[in-house]
Length: 523
Image (cartoon, rainbow, N blue to C red; front, side):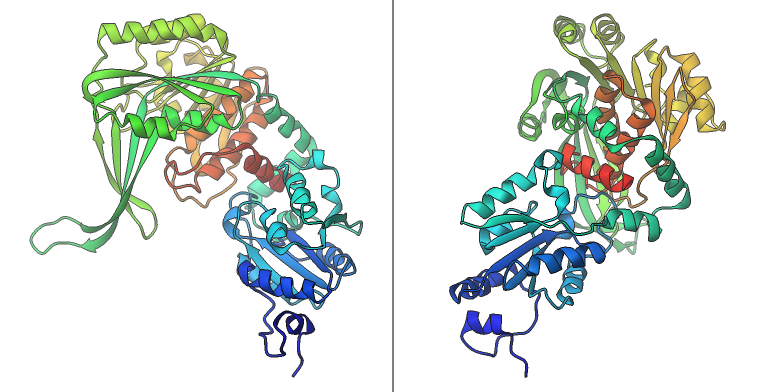
């Protein structure tokens, strides 16, 4: 029987398991024993979604730096390369790496960032690829934290210089992970647009001050398991499997913007009955500031969705709300607050869910006082046909869905590009618009250019709730900064693709994962 000398050194006998893939806690002990025996430990970390020659050269060079080579791989839920990635799950990626002769151990890192692995393994040498040598080019900032983790215990950071390939580029070009229309679009887009332009556009909004106005909605998810039809009634019986309560509506959009812009201030109204004020305040990200007013004798709008846990399918929903007109006093106080403050903001966003806050007086107020006005007027079951974008005579940016655009122009059948580029501009004075179309992507309109269609970047949908809010919230500052509308649509589609993978409002779209997803798409 062949004995692994590293494990002999760690355990003091020749009977330790030969399996190279180990939990990090177990590997800590093995490596500590190896270091006590005088062996030099080398660590590499990455996703390793598609092992290729560049990886082999990188790992081979790393192995020459010491006696024991440990490779850690990023766990699936922390691979920030967007929907559909990784191609291979973490246990398969670990197994692929363990098959390489000069790799001694492999572990899966369950933490969101990499620095905990060198902190726990305490390698003598930490080896990274040459694309990390310039820390300014690392959009995550992770390489500086990893360097610190290594050097804190006396280790050193080494960069390999061998031939490199991109797993994402190989996957994009050879594995047919995208449908032909999306693949063709990306190939054409790569030729015309540099990734640095998109990252620069995201960076350009980081100092912006944004004012948001809109309805607060409490989104309740009641998870159930269908049991069947009762013997005496023609209904579906279900078994409760728990529930989640989210602060939604305008707060969702504000939270999506928060990681991109310096300050986001929200003007909204809660009901005095069942206000859920604590939930709303607790849900706001640190740079989201709330100006809350109370509406007497009504609840905060709550939408309860009953969700089949097997496929996250919504069975039905129940609204608890009162959307009668606000009192004149409350409306006047809201308008006065907005009129006083709106001129001080780079951007005013109206997130109009049609539940009473945005009155004709509020529309006049934002039109008179906003330096740049972005508007989204949503159609839902509670306001069908009564909350159209045409209630706004003008705006600087409009973002609505395909069905909302069709309702606004009374056109059920025309091509959505025609609706976006011809019919809608006749109804509202707005030079730049986006019409989203779910799995079909979005259409961008700039009055000085042709309508452009950007295909959707994923068809893997967990939950559509809030995807339009993520798209709208992140693109509005980009348009206010003068971003090219096709590039804005590209970024918006990437944000929407990330959001449809999140249940409810458990998390918001953030800048670094979005930038990494765009990087993956354009490799």
